[in-house]
Image (cartoon, helix red, strand yellow):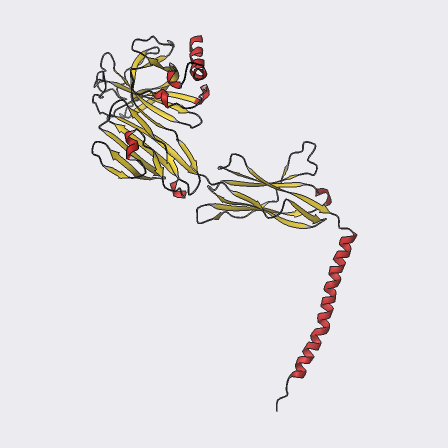
Length: 435
């Protein structure tokens, strides 16, 4: 057990130790082998049971002893393709997941054009996944058993693997993406990363991109090195020659949201990565009042918080009130008198929503702070907009002012009452009598 711990510690810190320059020099990776046990029921249907078994990737030479003899060891030797060189940045233990699975060539039996390959080779896939979504790397491991397995080496007839067995393998192909999940706004250019590496010059290479949205499937790009035919666009052919199959999307719109699938095939191997693209447009938040509003005691005012131009629809607007002084450790009070407009859908696919309430001013509310909090999936932190309420007493000056206004209105009404009859009489006097 102590050996295992030391290896794991070395794995995740040795990249920072002087003398070790990159992750490529890491000798061992802890993994999980997801093994399959297939049984056929009375109706002849296959039922698969999955068993998670401790395993490890060990990089070295044929005949090396297992660094951790307590697990299944996949000894990777003599590979021109090294999956480790595609791991970028500092990786700590809990951020890297390694999973090994058996791989079926779906009945295609052919000799891989590599040194020592045989038609009865057994295949595995090894997937390295960063838990924060920085990359997903899938490698194809070729193992040549000492004695061929009778029949087809697929789910119907998997060769058993002992708990402490060492399988000597070679990495023959790697397919990876550094954008397994993409979040982008509207009217933006976005590149979807897809990269591959093969241990020989592949004359039978196929690269394809498909788009999946709801139940619809669309082929965006396809290229075959054997036939030389290319359909669609967005992928540079010169890049494919360097192992870069990244797809450049046109300006994003609401209909760009969906799953993009990168396929890389070199017979009999077939690799793919699904890339989920989400359109996220953050809201613009505003209030219909300034940072400070003044009201007289018992005055009223409607206050509106507006969230505009967001996508998708899942926005939340809340109003809170902080008592004046803000002391005593009191939490802001959520207002329960807030009313909401309906979602307004704009021509560009975005939405808007308003949340409003009516302030009934009182003197003890003076100095209180009100704030609107808007949450949305595009925001790491909610947006806050606030104002402070100042309430003044209805005093003598206000009393005089209101009486002046009231008196002015009375004078105007009295003037109209006097002038209207005179204007009417004058109009009648100016009319000529008919002859």
